[in-house]
Length: 288
Image (tube, rainbow, N blue to C red; front, side, top):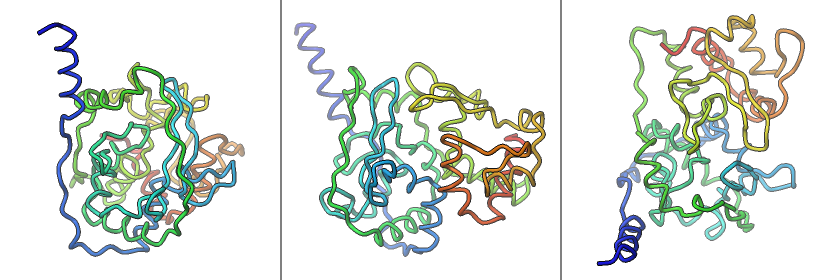
């Protein structure tokens, strides 16, 4: 067999290589209010609503320019063609926790499923119940505009093998309930590490530098380190950080701008005071 034929056979095997596992959730009853709160915490609304162009809530279309191409968030409304209205809860669970579409294709990690992999079955059921209440919008989101070779979606299977290690959320008994709640939020739904952790040339987070800040965010710009040492060095306290997550106002009187301003306006301002405090406690006490 020629080298060209071998390469073709290898690529075909990669395309048809099955990934993921099949969840079973149809018997679990979800709570709409808890799901709506979790969706807000997870950034679903801010990422999947094209507010700059007057887009409808959760109808997708938000643009994220990167070095790999332009990503556009998909439609998450109940429309059966443009959105997720034809999905089952199992397909939803597989997408959210495993990053796999109903067709079995891997999603690009611009979708932070790596952080959502720790969601419990009840979390998924709650989210699903909440999304069933979203009015259908027939507007299909734009397809991604990726540069070669990143436009070859099957190649993501190699990327997943290198960098995606799904883990269930596990609390640490030696830590307080507030610290553990903060850990769940920061390392799960709030996915703080998406922006605050530097990445390698393949776009994977440098986990050894978690939360130490990053440059070259989608659309440009940078974010500071939010490690415990750096926050303390900059004068942050639990109370001041908790207040900033509610109002956007920093201890020096300045306000959060850019992407963090959007996070506060659309996410953390809607959290309970207890959850904002849990985030502050976790970040200031440190991850270990």
